[in-house]
Length: 318
Image 1 (cartoon, rainbow, N blue to C red):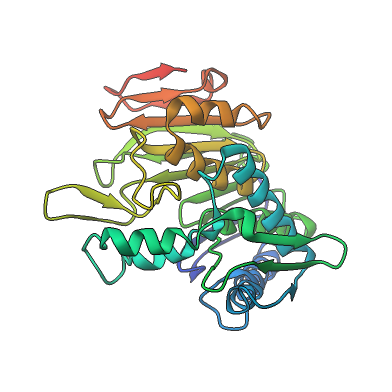
Image 2 (cartoon, rainbow, N blue to C red):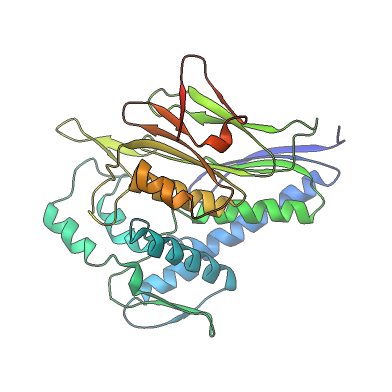
């Protein structure tokens, strides 16, 4: 067993973060990883005034912004997913997110306001210049939100920093985005629990992984119940302007990259099972655990030997 360990909890990227790091340089490596997350947040958060994303948003319709190669990588991948999904995944959804203000409101916005906000949503209005490394939004009032992809990228970077500082065993959880490095110190695989979308504190099962990311998108994270008793969650369908109603209530994606898993879990949640599994198939070595509105659990066949269901909860293959 490795001789040193560091465990820590903190708050960043608007969520709780926990770290379990093992190895000779665990304390020092953990410090570097935390610094990296702070750097990325200051670059990518639209809620930080001088971040690159904020500057793109502020200059929407009027100018290009010089960006970091990392920001370009994230935006490029987001656009790739938008093209594949014909806009079911769209990081220019921020005007709609601001309208559905889950922190301060529990009312459904007026339909006219939703339509007005929708006019500002459109991934094709995000223009990237890969030669000069710039980005811009074509129309005034447009804005980017990286909520469905940014934490995944940050998780990947965190793992890379730990690795670069000699760590061979670690698990990082950024608001439900779990990334692992190697195996546990005793050589066994990491077991990542998947939350039950309707029973707080309960799991539907767990998946065993080595050096992979496990990311879940669900309708239970942020939501309100409207006057008609309908659950209005925070994962919006950019094509309708309303919370996604795809028949799924939880989607977990397992992939080598947390950025891929993060974005795909959001996309599949919006797209629904049939389309979502087709999109998943575009990315090799990705697997999924899906829960539909009848609380039935479905897993991709490659997870057969890696997924363990909680007693009494059947897992169906897709």
